[in-house]
Length: 354
Image (cartoon, rainbow, N blue to C red; front, side, top):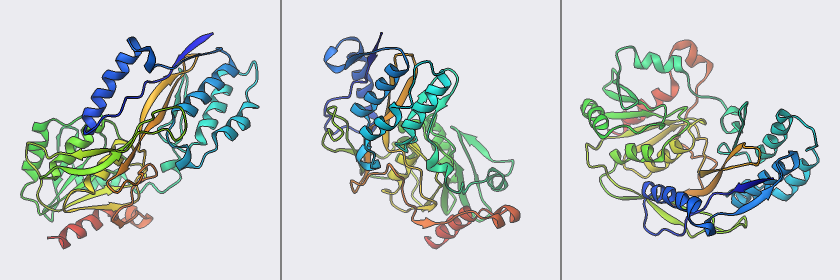
């Protein structure tokens, strides 16, 4: 018999920016784990095939946040997959069943981790054209590009700045961002190539976006679960983007996107669409607008899932992705000619916005 601890969700927090909310959430989670029994739902499941199945289904049933948006009947899913769980099945077989059940949610933030594999859903980008080529990007970057704070950047031959932002796994230092923008200051426009950025730290995304506004801006909303029902949510809490104290960009910007722009990178696009002079070019993003939480099954496997939905400034969900302002894709001709159609479209947009 194993005890299952489900994550504590925070009480209503008014007038809290996202990074502050995340910090408070982390503190509350620790307090709930060690001190506040009322914040922890404790339930016992047997550590066997059926017990692990029921534990996983119940965790998702009580805490997952996108059942209605995804159009998923979770009770019907349980019925369909429960009959596939049998006594004596191997761990690999159990993972396959549980992973397939979770894949019904079509959510890239839902993962089941074991010591030998990870069940995941990556259809949000695998089922679409990549619209990105390292080979093409390297032609634009060349070999003498600069690197600072995880960003690769240079000035293109038409005096347009180009910044390759491949991840938000780590925050760029304020000094790094100052130096990048100072170097690119003579440029008439700026391209931020976000393609294939799978996310990372929301604070890293906000820190970069804060360099593109001179005033506090409403950029979206978020909610959190307040009960076990599928529709038990708090009221929407506003997300605000505050201008950075360092150097800030004042000229036109083009943000390049594709389907693999996900999670924190998706949030960055949401922030940037609220900033002046910004045009999003490329393909629709992959989405991933649910702030993820984690829990554990009786056998020690860890499940991550979306628990707090987030919305844009018009209160529309961005879970399924954000549309670009200018749709452009890559074709075979681009590869053969060494020309990135998305970068070239962004350059054209920036030239027209002068």
